[in-house]
Length: 192
Image (cartoon, rainbow, N blue to C red; front, side):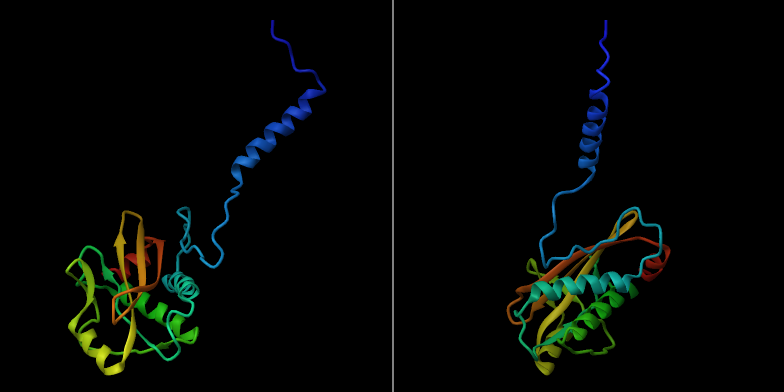
Protein backbone atom coordinates (compact mmCIF):
# COMPACT_ATOMS: atom_id res chain seq x y z
CA UNK A 1 0.00 0.00 0.00
CA UNK A 2 1.35 3.40 -1.04
CA UNK A 3 1.58 6.01 1.65
CA UNK A 4 0.64 9.51 0.50
CA UNK A 5 2.98 12.37 1.29
CA UNK A 6 1.97 14.18 4.46
CA UNK A 7 0.09 17.35 3.57
CA UNK A 8 2.72 19.52 5.28
CA UNK A 9 5.51 18.19 3.04
CA UNK A 10 3.68 18.66 -0.28
CA UNK A 11 4.30 22.46 -0.57
CA UNK A 12 7.97 22.02 0.42
CA UNK A 13 8.41 19.23 -2.13
CA UNK A 14 6.76 21.38 -4.81
CA UNK A 15 9.07 24.31 -4.09
CA UNK A 16 12.11 22.03 -4.11
CA UNK A 17 11.15 20.56 -7.49
CA UNK A 18 10.44 24.03 -8.87
CA UNK A 19 13.84 25.33 -7.76
CA UNK A 20 15.62 22.29 -9.27
CA UNK A 21 13.80 22.67 -12.60
CA UNK A 22 14.27 26.45 -12.70
CA UNK A 23 17.91 26.12 -11.63
CA UNK A 24 18.56 23.81 -14.56
CA UNK A 25 17.27 26.47 -16.95
CA UNK A 26 19.56 29.25 -15.72
CA UNK A 27 23.14 29.33 -16.91
CA UNK A 28 25.71 30.07 -14.23
CA UNK A 29 28.62 30.51 -16.61
CA UNK A 30 29.56 34.03 -17.65
CA UNK A 31 31.48 34.98 -20.78
CA UNK A 32 34.97 36.34 -20.35
CA UNK A 33 35.00 40.07 -19.75
CA UNK A 34 36.15 42.03 -22.77
CA UNK A 35 35.46 39.19 -25.18
CA UNK A 36 31.98 39.73 -26.60
CA UNK A 37 30.26 36.77 -28.18
CA UNK A 38 28.86 37.65 -31.58
CA UNK A 39 26.24 35.48 -33.18
CA UNK A 40 22.59 35.48 -33.98
CA UNK A 41 20.49 32.82 -32.24
CA UNK A 42 19.37 29.82 -34.29
CA UNK A 43 15.73 30.56 -33.48
CA UNK A 44 15.80 34.02 -35.05
CA UNK A 45 13.26 34.44 -37.80
CA UNK A 46 13.63 38.20 -38.28
CA UNK A 47 15.90 39.58 -40.98
CA UNK A 48 19.49 40.06 -39.86
CA UNK A 49 21.59 43.03 -40.89
CA UNK A 50 25.03 41.66 -41.88
CA UNK A 51 26.58 45.08 -41.28
CA UNK A 52 25.39 45.18 -37.69
CA UNK A 53 26.74 41.70 -36.97
CA UNK A 54 30.05 42.58 -38.68
CA UNK A 55 30.39 45.75 -36.64
CA UNK A 56 29.78 43.85 -33.40
CA UNK A 57 32.48 41.38 -34.44
CA UNK A 58 34.84 44.27 -35.21
CA UNK A 59 34.15 45.74 -31.78
CA UNK A 60 35.26 42.45 -30.24
CA UNK A 61 38.43 42.47 -32.34
CA UNK A 62 39.21 46.06 -31.33
CA UNK A 63 38.88 45.12 -27.65
CA UNK A 64 41.23 42.14 -27.96
CA UNK A 65 43.65 44.11 -30.18
CA UNK A 66 44.44 46.50 -27.37
CA UNK A 67 47.72 48.28 -28.10
CA UNK A 68 49.20 45.64 -30.44
CA UNK A 69 48.78 48.12 -33.29
CA UNK A 70 50.29 51.55 -32.71
CA UNK A 71 48.71 54.85 -33.70
CA UNK A 72 49.16 55.74 -37.37
CA UNK A 73 49.81 52.12 -38.37
CA UNK A 74 47.62 51.52 -41.40
CA UNK A 75 45.08 48.71 -41.87
CA UNK A 76 44.17 47.46 -45.34
CA UNK A 77 40.78 45.70 -45.62
CA UNK A 78 40.73 42.70 -47.98
CA UNK A 79 37.53 41.20 -49.36
CA UNK A 80 36.41 38.19 -47.33
CA UNK A 81 36.66 35.00 -49.36
CA UNK A 82 34.67 31.81 -49.75
CA UNK A 83 36.45 29.09 -47.75
CA UNK A 84 35.61 26.61 -50.51
CA UNK A 85 37.40 28.75 -53.12
CA UNK A 86 39.89 31.21 -51.63
CA UNK A 87 40.17 33.10 -54.90
CA UNK A 88 36.46 33.93 -54.96
CA UNK A 89 34.55 36.57 -53.09
CA UNK A 90 31.00 37.90 -53.26
CA UNK A 91 29.07 41.07 -52.48
CA UNK A 92 28.74 39.69 -48.94
CA UNK A 93 32.53 39.26 -48.68
CA UNK A 94 33.09 42.84 -49.79
CA UNK A 95 30.34 44.16 -47.49
CA UNK A 96 31.72 42.38 -44.42
CA UNK A 97 35.22 43.78 -45.07
CA UNK A 98 33.91 47.32 -45.55
CA UNK A 99 31.61 47.22 -42.51
CA UNK A 100 34.37 45.93 -40.24
CA UNK A 101 36.89 48.42 -41.65
CA UNK A 102 34.38 51.20 -40.95
CA UNK A 103 34.25 50.16 -37.31
CA UNK A 104 38.06 50.17 -37.05
CA UNK A 105 38.03 53.71 -38.47
CA UNK A 106 35.39 54.79 -35.95
CA UNK A 107 37.63 53.41 -33.18
CA UNK A 108 40.47 55.68 -34.32
CA UNK A 109 42.55 53.29 -36.45
CA UNK A 110 43.97 54.38 -39.81
CA UNK A 111 42.31 52.40 -42.60
CA UNK A 112 43.32 52.79 -46.23
CA UNK A 113 40.62 52.32 -48.87
CA UNK A 114 42.04 51.30 -52.21
CA UNK A 115 39.92 50.63 -55.26
CA UNK A 116 41.52 48.32 -57.79
CA UNK A 117 40.30 46.53 -60.86
CA UNK A 118 41.01 43.19 -59.21
CA UNK A 119 40.05 42.16 -55.71
CA UNK A 120 42.45 42.34 -52.82
CA UNK A 121 42.28 38.77 -51.60
CA UNK A 122 44.30 36.47 -49.44
CA UNK A 123 45.54 33.38 -51.20
CA UNK A 124 46.57 30.11 -49.67
CA UNK A 125 50.16 29.07 -50.17
CA UNK A 126 52.78 27.04 -48.34
CA UNK A 127 50.30 26.07 -45.63
CA UNK A 128 49.48 29.65 -44.71
CA UNK A 129 47.63 32.64 -46.07
CA UNK A 130 49.80 34.98 -48.05
CA UNK A 131 48.93 38.32 -49.58
CA UNK A 132 48.14 38.46 -53.25
CA UNK A 133 50.68 40.28 -55.43
CA UNK A 134 48.50 43.41 -55.59
CA UNK A 135 48.33 43.63 -51.81
CA UNK A 136 52.12 43.23 -51.51
CA UNK A 137 52.59 46.23 -53.79
CA UNK A 138 50.04 48.24 -51.83
CA UNK A 139 51.82 47.37 -48.57
CA UNK A 140 55.04 48.86 -49.93
CA UNK A 141 53.40 51.96 -51.40
CA UNK A 142 51.07 52.83 -48.50
CA UNK A 143 53.13 51.37 -45.62
CA UNK A 144 50.31 49.05 -44.56
CA UNK A 145 50.98 47.44 -41.18
CA UNK A 146 48.07 45.02 -41.04
CA UNK A 147 45.46 43.43 -43.28
CA UNK A 148 41.87 42.88 -42.19
CA UNK A 149 40.96 39.59 -43.87
CA UNK A 150 38.40 36.89 -43.47
CA UNK A 151 36.66 33.89 -44.91
CA UNK A 152 33.17 32.44 -44.75
CA UNK A 153 31.58 29.02 -45.02
CA UNK A 154 28.00 28.51 -46.08
CA UNK A 155 26.08 25.72 -44.36
CA UNK A 156 22.49 24.61 -44.87
CA UNK A 157 20.88 27.42 -42.86
CA UNK A 158 23.79 29.52 -41.51
CA UNK A 159 26.90 31.28 -42.70
CA UNK A 160 30.01 31.10 -40.52
CA UNK A 161 32.61 33.86 -40.73
CA UNK A 162 36.18 34.12 -39.46
CA UNK A 163 37.82 37.56 -39.42
CA UNK A 164 41.50 38.22 -38.67
CA UNK A 165 43.73 41.26 -38.40
CA UNK A 166 47.09 40.03 -39.72
CA UNK A 167 50.39 41.91 -39.31
CA UNK A 168 51.92 42.20 -42.79
CA UNK A 169 55.62 41.95 -41.95
CA UNK A 170 55.45 38.55 -40.24
CA UNK A 171 51.91 37.16 -40.71
CA UNK A 172 51.09 37.19 -36.98
CA UNK A 173 47.36 37.38 -36.21
CA UNK A 174 46.90 40.39 -33.94
CA UNK A 175 43.19 39.90 -33.35
CA UNK A 176 40.43 37.62 -34.63
CA UNK A 177 36.76 36.87 -34.21
CA UNK A 178 34.35 34.17 -35.34
CA UNK A 179 30.67 34.86 -35.86
CA UNK A 180 27.67 33.48 -37.69
CA UNK A 181 24.38 34.59 -39.18
CA UNK A 182 21.26 32.79 -40.34
CA UNK A 183 21.21 32.23 -44.09
CA UNK A 184 18.26 34.51 -44.87
CA UNK A 185 17.07 35.31 -48.42
CA UNK A 186 18.92 38.66 -48.35
CA UNK A 187 22.19 37.06 -47.30
CA UNK A 188 21.76 34.33 -49.95
CA UNK A 189 21.36 37.10 -52.54
CA UNK A 190 24.61 38.70 -51.36
CA UNK A 191 26.48 35.41 -51.92
CA UNK A 192 25.86 35.45 -55.69
